[in-house]
Image (cartoon, rainbow, N blue to C red; front, side, top):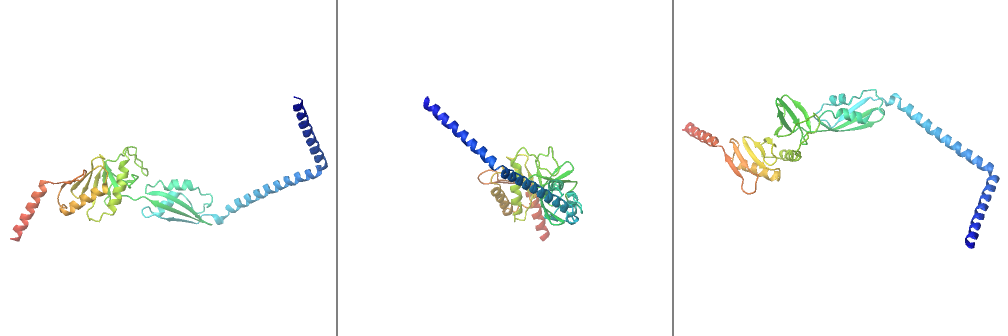
Length: 295
């Protein structure tokens, strides 16, 4: 116990000596420390004033007419007209290039269903470039008297009263509940979107000369599509490429272009081919007529 007290007294006296030395240091260097503190404060004030002057300079520079918008360039568009994109952007010649709000401009342009994305670049001192990526119309579904145009991802691009000038593939069985032009259909079965995306790619590389004219996705386990008057029964969406190639090869080999019926390839093993009897009768009558004409 006595040793602890001695140690305690030793520590206490050491602190007192340090405090005494520090106090003596402050008294001896009082003027020097005050000058150092004033110098530091002056330096901080000068730095703050410099930043403020720079900010004011930048603000005044940005307000100069040299930065007023003089040119709006649009690139990447093939479907949507340049003038329409400019109008949607709601940007006017004379606007300050630094005051333009990118988020607002993008939102305005994306109202058009054909526009997938927008990139905005400033080309100083007075030009902006609007680079757009467009969606490609590929499908349509008719609801009542209205044709709804869609891309492969089920985005509704627009609605039309007729599509005579468009080369599109008809699709049936999509869910249009809550549909909004420019937005994506909300499908209960997400397999439909995946199927349409894959089918688009296969149609584009199809070199058979025979087009698919309709696809029915009402039942994803019994998918049907039509080539001419012939119905192709695919079953589910699995192995789509193999099934479609098999069906098209049969269609070509059997010369079914002017006939109607169906080819079923939705299961393993040999496909089922059915030709309507009316086709056979028509073919026989046509053959007889040709023979009579020859005689």
